[in-house]
Amino acid sequence: MTDAPPTLEAPWPVALLANKIRGYIERLGTAWVEGEITQWGVSGGNVYGKLKDLSEDATVGFTVWSSVKARLSDEFKQGDRVIALVKPNYWVKGGTLTMQVFDLRHVGLGDMLERLERLRKQLAAEGLFATSRKKPLPFLPHCIGLVTGKDSDAEKDVIRNAQLRWPAVDFHLAYAAMQGDRSVAEVVAAIQRLDADPDVDVIIVARGGGDFQNLLGFSDERVLRAAAACATPLVSAIGHEADRPLLDEVADLRASTPTDAAKRVVPDVSDELNRVQQARARLSTRLTGILAAEVDRIGQLRSRPVLSSTAWIVDSRAEDLTRYVARGTELVERVVEASAGVVTELRSRLRTLSPQGTLDRGYAIVQVREGHVLRAAADAPDGTRLRITLGAGTLAATAGPSAESAADPATDPAADPATGPKTTARTQ
Image (tube, rainbow, N blue to C red):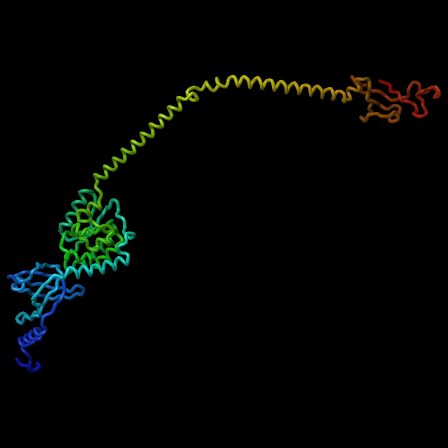
């Protein structure tokens, strides 16, 4: 091995470069690292896997020799969050870099719970857990969006139990990894895809049981914010009754198991039919009672004397009617009698004041030709034609001197110097 730098004229052999890389890497020593196991395969007693960063897109391979694996106190599998004591190891023959694991431990439960508690307080302060923001589930969803693993037991449980309760219910499926490094991104994408589907009435996120670490993806902040932003009602059905990921707090409804989610979301057709029949029975009983009460009330009304016969109205009022008729007749006769006396009195007064009465007493009315009443003899010169109206009939006359007008005025009383000669009318 030479320490001379490589040049175009004197390049290093590949083996020299590989050995220098291995020597440099081996000087790095051991380090404790934290990550998530995304691959765990056993071959010949040795373990070959991959460890992924918890937040960044960075992955390294690792090897656990059988001697080290025999000393490990815990069982490990894909999806576990671990802390590993590793040392970089460069394999010269294959030209690959791997991490040789000398110790492997699960991340302390206390550390993970502390992180989840901080996240819980943060989201609670933002109001993501508030009851007021939770949306009610539809009474009878026509289409259910289901986020679950493909061909998983959770998928079969939800669909079977939902269709047993209501056979006409439909499902839109969005498959996603329910654990591992792809879980969070795929679950978020599935929720968003179903939320954008106008046919979906409610979304169920369902996963079967698992240990605490396998369910950590459903307490990831990205999943929780996607669920909070979902406009469609969302149901969390993760694990079993004892499992409580933070998605249960954000979801509009928490179901203890996938089977429970199907029962909570879809009503039982037989129960609903029973309720309808019970409602119809109560309605029929109520209407029958109302009708019976009204029939009895009408019968009571009809049995009363006032409605049993119409003759009582005339019979009970006949005496009053007779009295009222007699009283009316008496009053009318009195009025007629009083009015007759008034008419007689008025007739007498009229006759007294009438010119006809004066004529009947022997007086006469003398009118000249023009119809004027003659009031003085001087107004009717000799030869004036007159009309004399008597009490009975009229006479035509002509004015002329009286028979005594030629007599001596001294002996003629009609020749009073004060009044002059009197006119004498001769009838014709």
